[in-house]
Image (tube, rainbow, N blue to C red; front, side, top):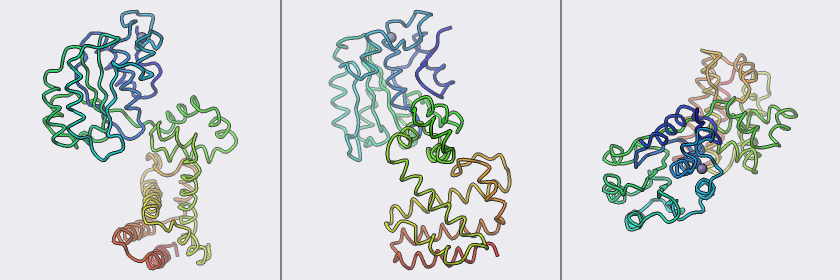
Length: 346
Ligand SMILES: [Zn+2]
């Protein structure tokens, strides 16, 4: 049996579904690939483009895409005029001009291979006018053209566009699948997993199921920043224990970032940790968002009562509202310290 998309991780059912359609020549001319940030939408789109032109399509002994034929090599490297990438180039939206350029280009024959593939990234940032202009092209594109729209949120697209495309969804990875993925891609992760497992599993948790984000965290300085933010949140949780001195609680609060946007992100992370603990009280097997290691979360969970956790959650939400309303930050920190002191285990 032919193997489909062997270089992609996760998304098994989706890969099988797409592979079989391409093999049977039933692949539609327009798709919308929806998925969270870093779930491999772009990688999947390029692999589909390669599979559509792969010269080993009917060779049972070769996977699809084979990755070796000239079409695969050039398309996967985005090094051919037959693969056209359209994006917002850093702007907030994709305007009608971009769609007009595609329209002018799509009726010209492919240059190197049998098919031209347009990949429109961040398609949910297309203006309504651009989406309307796209409609006609989605209805009757030339036979040798495939349009792949990538977006995080398909509901941001016009219903008329959604009804003319087939929607594919990339999935988030489970923590164990994400660990396998990272270990197979970054040699340093293997060392980290054996020498500093807390750090390793914290980064896996911080990636939130996204392989793209995970690779960034393990290979760039973003990882250190994320770990520092998580440490701040853990200090806050530990300072809620009655045996910890009150000054430590105030110190933990003032260690929060002083810039509003960063402070809001930190509060969001704090809320995520409290959410994990609240859910753990009900079910020890619940999937965790903040904690990388379940044992650590369970140990911390045992020290809190449900009432304490709910009060802490309410205090975080109230603080976030104050920050959003531009309240004075010194006052915000004081009121958060007071609220956490009242919510703390007595
Ligand atoms: Zn090939």
